[in-house]
Length: 256
Image 1 (cartoon, rainbow, N blue to C red):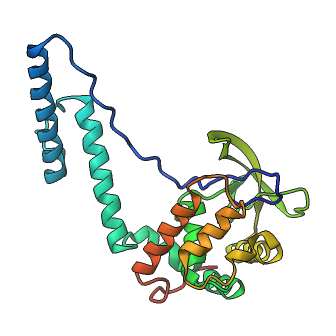
Image 2: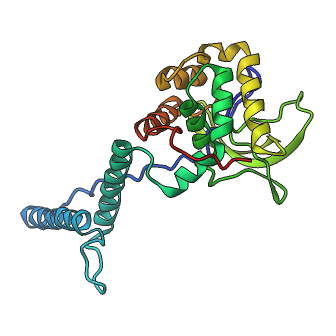
Image 3: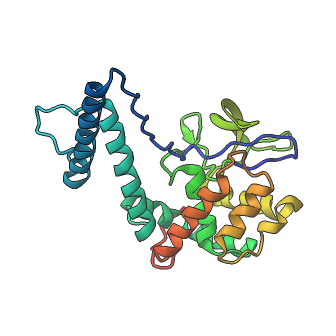
């Protein structure tokens, strides 16, 4: 989510999912017997993790329990890494993701022309900020159609949606309630986004990036579009994912 002024903090996307990490096992005490017991337990953990990965159902019978919490966390982390790697290798293959891209295709292409970048970069930014459309911002019961997390500053004269968001301040992650712009439709959201980037000199380096996802993402992050220290990396990865998947060319538009 972008900054409207040099001093205003902005929020990263709610679509970001935290990585699951496994705790290191506590060091065993009590001499050789304890050391041997720990070694056996750790070997069992490794075997259970391997079974979890290989079988997909955890490798356990319906009435069995995991050997330890550490095994469960390690297995989950390893499986998540495997799934993430597969998505990165093959690009966009989720039906939900394809539907989202089709729904925004006309506006992504229109906006891309104004910014001098490929439609995939614009679509990637919308996907990052909206969680592939799964986390729509609300204005009451209606959608705010704010796919880019643009905040409502003092100069904003339109409708406003109030939502909880995440900010990073001095390296600390904080939850805040902020005011965001609300739009009547998807087209308005994209056109306001294009106006924001083209009218603010701070974002000049992001313009005319072509299909260079790294340059586009890096320029937005450096300009202060969001406070998330990993924002450029996240945006760049989604853009690369879209590019590997063939982009928007083969999609049938369904947008309003």
